[in-house]
Amino acid sequence: MTRSSAREIAVHIIFALGFDTRSAQEILDAELTRERFQELAEELPLYAQFPNEKQEQYIRQLVQGVFAHGPELDDFIGRYSVGWAFARIPRMAAAVMRTAMYEVLYMPGIPNAAAINEAVEIAKKYEPAEVVSFVNGILGTFVRAEFEDTPPKPEKKAPEGEE
Image (cartoon, rainbow, N blue to C red; front, side, top):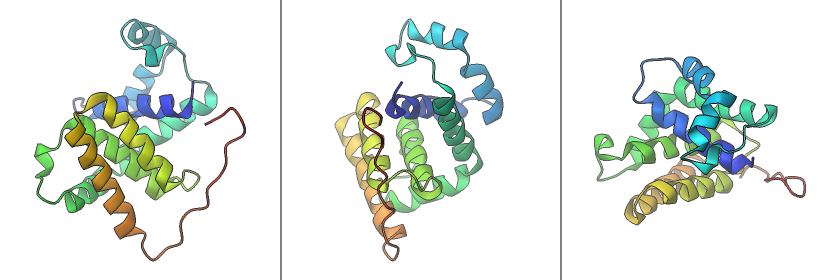
């Protein structure tokens, strides 16, 4: 499983948080099982491979982080989505943006450009082109506005064959 796949699984779980009364931990414990992956793999090839320990830790960190910082992340989305009421933003697009913003704000090992690019690639799978453009615009504006006075995070090269 690649980091991109782990990120997309995290986005699925973050999306599900909006429809569930359970905590992030409870949802993670229910979703991150081999049995659940086998069920989901029948319809979604993304779930064909169960995450290794490092990938599972990454998924858990994203989901728990987005859950813990939800109001802050939604405030950023609302602030930069000029002309769009938050309620009008598709839920999957919001989950994608929350994930990318969390990575930008709280995961210094992930370059901002990578977080945005990955978010756009995930959005392309679930949203029409105009929503993908919206996601890209919001995330780009967010990074430029929030980090204009700080030097960019140093890019960390992944070992050959990894993402």
